[in-house]
Image 1 (tube, one colour):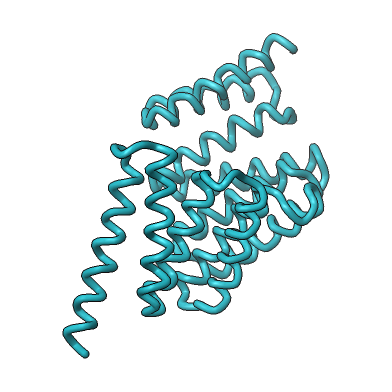
Image 2 (image 1 turned 135 degrees about the horizontal axis):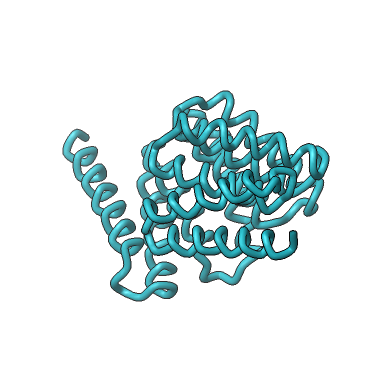
Length: 238
């Protein structure tokens, strides 16, 4: 049994490595191999099998195969609840991942409900401040922004940013993400000066983190270009 679990862990690690390299199709093949191995060796009630299911679901979601991802997420959630009970970090992760799926599908009510459930569970598991809590707050903020619930979105994004500044060093990708999301929110509100400030701070942070030649730098420059264009258009109209 121990040897099988080790083999399954190795396959799961390989999936994460392949996905990190952008080789998603090969990652799916290996993730399916891991799931098949777990099922054939009767490991379906083991946490490492849940990790395999979750990896496969994540890969399908990333590639937009939502109908294939959903049953895998639900299966993972059900098994984890049976293994660990309702108050466990792995259960919170499953709730969060299922919420991300519904968010991608535009099912905002279901996504919001699951993110809120995950948020409360993270707090039970880790207290009031944790990087998982900040991430879930960020996800909620994006849902509120996309729905036009801007005041709620600002409140949640500011809370996520403040928590991330406490949790990490000033130069951290999660902080840059919060700044970028706040900038997008302020752009939607027409608060262009606030948006510019956030974009510039995010850009400077990304340059410190990644150097001058990185896709995130290009993304920030593109965001700034769009913002300056909007400012120009609104200036001409006035």
